[in-house]
Structures are given as C-alpha cells and as structure tokens.
Amino acid sequence: MTSEERHATPTRRTAWIIGATATLAAVVVVSVIVLLLGSQSLPEWIPSIDGQSEMDATPLSEAPKPDASGDPVADEPRELVYVEGDVGFPSTLNPLLTESVAEESAASLLFRGLLRTGPDGDPVPDLAGDWSVSEDGLRYHVEIDSAAEWHDGEPVTSADVLFTLNLITDPDFPGDASVSRFWRAIEAERIDDRTVEFRLMEPYVGFPNYLRFPVLPHHRLGATLPGDLATIDFLNDPDDVIGSSEYTLDEIDLDNRELHFARRNDDGPDGSFTRIVFRYFDTRQDVFQAFNDGEIDGVSYVPLEALEGDRVIERDARIYGPSLSSYTALFFNVRHPHLRTPEVRRALEHAIDREALIEQVLGGHAIPGSSPIPHMHSAHAPGSHATYNPSRARGILEEHGWSVVDESGILARDEEYFSFSLIVNNEDQQRVAVAEVIRDQLSMVGILVDVMPMPSADLEQALNRRQYAAALVGWHTDNGNPDCYQMWHSAQAEEGTNFTGFSSSEADELLVGARQSIRIEERNEYYAAFQEVFAEHAPAVVLFYPRYHFAVSTDIEGAAPIPLVSPGDRVRQITEWYHDSRAATSGGVAAREGNELAHVQRGAVNRLGLQRPVGYNHSQ
Image 1: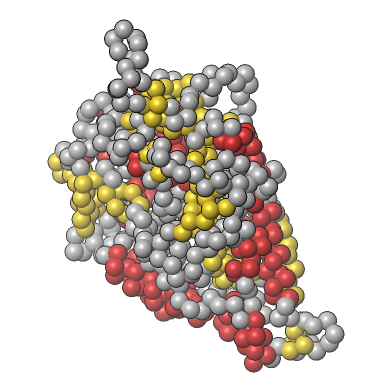
Image 2 (image 1 turned 60 degrees about the vertical axis):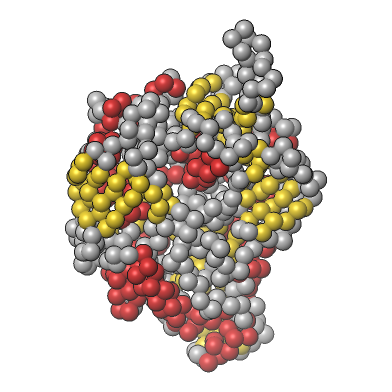
C-alpha cells in the first residue's frame, strides 16, 4: 500500500471503543486504538478528476472594489484572500458524515458545535454561551450564546440541537454507529429556545467532550429523514449550505477544484482575510509545487518526509506543529513469562531512548512520551520515570536473575534467552522503522527482539486473542476526552480492549473515580494518581506524542500551534489569521512549534525548537 493510498483511507476506519464502568450504566464511547494509521500520517480522500482548468483564485489578493460604473475605487478597503492547498476534492460538506481531512476541514470552517476543545485540551464554549453541571453530575445545562446565528440570520436555538441529535440517534443514521449508540443513552430536553438540558444515567466527567458534535439548522433541514442524510452533500449549490461560523460558503468552483468562503463581518483584526479559498490537487507534490510557485499561501498538511526532504519547501514559510490527542506506545502482554514482572518492564523502559528514536525516525518532530494521558491535555502528568538509563536497566535485569552466559551477549535465565517478538502493522513503514529502533536499543542491554510486521487485520486479531508478546500501536481519542478506562481497567483485561492484561485494583478505583468526577480539577487529581500507578507497573512504554504539521507563508500572522483533537480543528483559528505586508522574511523556512521559533534554510528544518521537554506545558 502506497503512502497516498494510506492517506486515502477514511478516518472512520478506526474503531470506537465502547464500554462502561461497573457503576456507569450509560454506554459511552471513549477512545480509538489506531492500528492502521501511522504515528504521523493522516487520512485523505483522493478522487480522480480529469480536465483541470486554469485556476483563477489569487493568493493574498488585494483588489480594489469597483464602484457602480465598474471602475476600481482606489481608496476602498481591499479584499484579502487566503488560498490553501489540499489533496482530494471533498465528496461532502455534511459535518455529520465527513470522512477525510479535506472534508472535515471544509465543514469545520462552516459548522460549529456547542463546545470545542480549548488550548489545554479541555472543553470551552463555542455555540454555547455557558454551560453548567448539577452537583450530582447527572444534569448538564447548556445555554446557547444569544449572538449565535445561522448564515441566513436566523438564531441558533435548542430546536437545532435536538434536531441534530434526533438525526444522530435514529437507527437509520448513516454516520458513525458508535456515536449514535452513545447519544441514545443520553436524554436531551428543551428548557427554552436557548437552553438544553442533558440527563445522564451516571456521572461522567467526559460528557462535555461529546458536545463537540456539529449542529445542523432545523429551519432548513427539518424535513430531512435520517436515512436520507447521506444524500445531502451540500456540494450542489452554495445557498444550500447554512452554517453558523464566521465564514459562509460563497462559491463551489468544480472546474478549478476550489471552495470559496466569505467572511460574514469585519470584526477581525487589521489585515484579516475577507475570503478563504481551499484549492484541491491530485498529489501532495502538486500542493508543494503550487506553494513554492506562490500560487497558494498555505499547505494544509506537511508530512514528515516533506520536512526531512531536500528542498521540498523552497519558499519562505512558517511550519507549525501542534500536538494531537494521541500517542504511540510499546504495549506489553503482561502474561508473557519474560514480561510479567513490573520491575522487568520498567527496566525495558529505561533501555529505550525516546529522544534518539524520535530523532532517527521522526526527524525530531514529536514530543517524547511518558504517560497514557496525551500531552495536550490538562490531565497530563508525566512524572520522572521515563528516563533513558541503560545501566539502570541492566542492573534491574540482573537483580531478577538475567545475565549473559555466552558469547552471544544475550541475557539468559534458567537456560532461556531473554527474547520476544514485537508485532507492528506493515502498512506503515514509519511505524516499522520505530519498531526496528526499539529492537536495536533493547539489544544494547542484552534483549533479543524479533520485529514481526503484519497486516493490521492480523495484528488486531493477535491483540484480541492476547496471542502476542509486545505490540507497537497507537491510541487516539476522536473527541478530546482523555478517559482511558477502556485501555487500562481490569474489567477489560480478558475480552475487552485492555489487551495488555494489566490489572490493578488501585488503578481501577482511580479510573472509575476520574470518570465519575463532577469537575475537571477533581478528574485531573484522579488521573495524576493513576499515572503514578501506571508508571510503577509499566504495562506499556509510551514512546511519543505525534504532531500535525502545516505551513503558511511568512507574511501571514496569527497562526499558532494550538493542540488539535483532529486535523479539521486547525481551520477554526483561521478567523484570527491576518496578512502582514510589513512582515520581514528570513530568507528561509521558520519551524514554529510551541513557543519556540527556529529560522532555517529553504528546503530543510532545523532541529532547534522541534522537541519540547516532557514536562512542557503548552498553555504557558
């Protein structure tokens, strides 16, 4: 499978994990195990479209507006247009049914949810003006912002929220079935035109994360049946698309493969873009060529190979690398005779040099891992256990009876070598390369690892059957909820998604306590304690937290590496971007990640600023 084919696979191919705690009656969707996706690669839908016409959208255009006679008026405010390149023209703009990054990005520029994910990974108001939870944690009141309105001027009301939920919960809903199941366990009631009450069967602190769902206009789509939802792609006529964001869909240019968006008001900063154009290409290489030629102002996604390649980006640019709500880890089967002892697993953790691994395989473009709570979340508490110390690793192994007995240099105990297999999905060569670096690093302390690449379907079967020793896989949450009950609670150890078999009564109590917390601050206290227990038992070695990279020209300001739940979230900050005609260029590419900025030569990215300390707080 080629890299472009992997990108073409829909995002919905990752399976939601469904379950409940012993005290949580409602079925909740909490996480995604990423098996097919690589640590950095993200999916794209790439159609075959022939007969591309000449493209007429001009990047950063500043055209004087004509007067009544059609002649330009020089002193009128000038229109600023931002043009961004992506791969694969969207097949739908229906926000409930998007599958590719291109589709999600376009829909995200048009539609909003009640809440969104803030800079620290926690929910903040979007369409909602305010929200609150009852003292028992069973009722959530959400008040819609009085200023929230649809593109046609109609107010956003509770009827829109309930209409959208009725579509999602209907048995004929053509979207993600797990999302539908989750919402069927929640009661939603209109309190008044601007207020909705949600009632849960059990307290669940992660519920606000699910209020990210995009709201559709009841007054325009009220007659739509759930089974017919898939027939509405919004790509026939811009007037059909009535969203609630700062930008409206102004034109669908199929000949030039462009979507044009217009800003609704002039409330943005000086130099803010009055128009946004998404231009779609056949290949990623075509996108880079258009950027280098000055035909577009931004690149929606910059894969790692482009960051590392020679002169891929030849134009002055800033490359941003926000972190994602995910991680890649080495998971152990704690039933394996060599891996059942926590001290031995901790020894293996000390034998793995995360920073060297990230440098060798990812070019430094990831955050060293330490915790099963992704780096972008306020609940992330890395601790000090994730240190590279091969001498300490060797000492621990010797304390547990492992020693070198022959010229092979492999540790042995009771006439048996310390060896095990490491399975990894072969569709992602980057992940295979990570597995090979782990093999080489563990060999330095006398452990023999056999890397076994296999199709993702076979890997998933091996995990489900618990027929493996170690596996390299990833974890991702589709809604920003850091709840990891499904991965680590002992109730999931035999037949659920806790395929490591990790079992700890202390961890169980903390995971349930975190779920049933009323406040995020209380939840974070539970998760801080859980992360300490996790570090002590080491059922997995969290290797790194991936980043999503995008590029813009150096005369665009206001962009920031705000953490992302999904790549489509990135476009929500475009409303804050603006063109600075006075911006001085550095004669090269600027790689900007976190609060750090590194100026480098064209076509290459300096390592400076591309790695953040494990304890770095992205909200600082």
